[in-house]
Image (cartoon, rainbow over all chains, first blue to last red; front, side, top):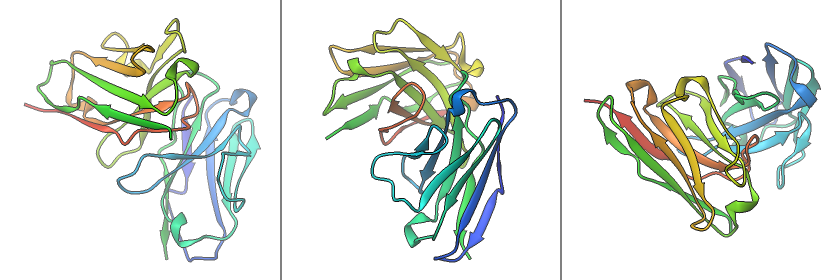
Length: 107
Length: 116
């Protein structure tokens, strides 16, 4: 399954809303779709699994939605620490492919 | 505290082999699927392989099938990745993570560089 994220880069200001898109080339079974955040020099951190369930300790400004082939990560109000690269990953079928990432940068 | 520490990375010539390790502490890996994910310099994440709790099931991305072998020693609380016939395209930071699908806890990564 090929996973495509858009846009490649999102330029926003703190306090703004961020909407990130993830599209799969085939239906993701059981909505097995996860979102990760990665900051420079750090390992990824899981934010969302099962398309819409927040991982432990993740603030509620992060939310995931979608089903089938189209998924969205929304950050309701960007905090300074949210500027990073975000990846989606389907794990409904092996290999568990990642998207190419969306960079959220400060405008 | 859950901790994963990768080791064994380094410079290797094309066609060479390397085994990297992931030592876990603060929990027992015997209760978890485990996986390897890699990231080429300046690039995105690529899922590489995963292994069931008892090692009875293993899955690989096509690009490493027949060259890489994932294994585990639950008694030593350690995950391994044996990499053979390495090419420049295998140059990356290799991360281990708990979970066979969603990576919950991650190590800091170990850099493998394939170059002559």
